[in-house]
Length: 461
Image (cartoon, rainbow, N blue to C red; front, side, top):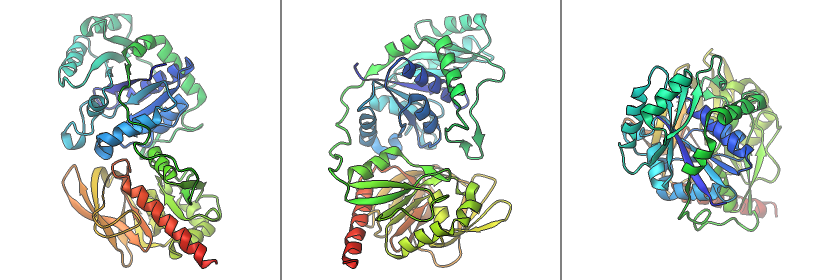
């Protein structure tokens, strides 16, 4: 089958776009198609739902964080063994960085040449739906809006009015308004990650049933465009013949925010990734040369993490031995002296960074950031430029001497701050980086791990 792609976008948030995309991905998979799911933007949580519905790991597509070349490479990499790309948009179709279209779903559609099917919350409207749909179709001629799915439709008469207003040639489905509709469980940072607790098989089956009853899936397949001109997988980078270093990856309920492409880049550079659980394992895996602690919910498991003193000692000992350790957001919190929860309770952490992490009920930072390093580190030389995203309910308060090597620009406000805490071979930050923007960063990290292994082998004779 010719590889094809399609974007499911929306007029704004809370239209039901995620639920409908899950339903479509599941319905296509049920037909025997190999579905590659994607999520526009920096989100870590929606991709876990899309992955479960499609039966394949979900990659992010974010032209601002990745650059246009990185965007194409991520798409090509994920489509290697897939038939169709189903891309869930982010926010409204044209909403991007700091009020512009940069990084928007529309920019993804334009750069990759993918058609768009729009999801519209049609409750309380009829002819206005036509004005909105055709107004969006004519807003930017780079974006090919080829279909419409109306959500929260009151009944057959309402559906007929919507079809008349928008044009039957574009109409791909009408999802009825459902009392007690299938919903996805959430927590204070948004959706829970998809697992047997938050996305049960019965819920997914129900979503697929909705797509099969109320969406013209055949029409969506006709709308999907062939994927032409994709670069070879990973550009000039190819998977190493055999691993040369071993990197421990924190992976459990407390730590699970990773961009899949970042991990693939590490493997392609010769790293064997060895998963471990800071919650239950008593120490790092044997014979590792580096540690990568991603984001997650350490604040929800502070008591358990603090009680696992064997792991805390193991990671602290590894850092003191010169092992490269890289932490993002949740990883940063774990590497600090302690965490203070919103109820005032304190829990000791690894004690590598002389700082206390203080949790708040309200959001402390959200949005895209540009990073430039002010000194050499395991991520590269001084002046290394990176792009990423922050989403946090906490802040770091130094308890001793701290050294920052990130100059961080918040794109929404233009504010410049110092961040990126460095202690010897440890670097940790609130910023979630996507390495497709600068692949020299994972190259530098693997090189640092390789140097540590050589020195370790020399030390042990």
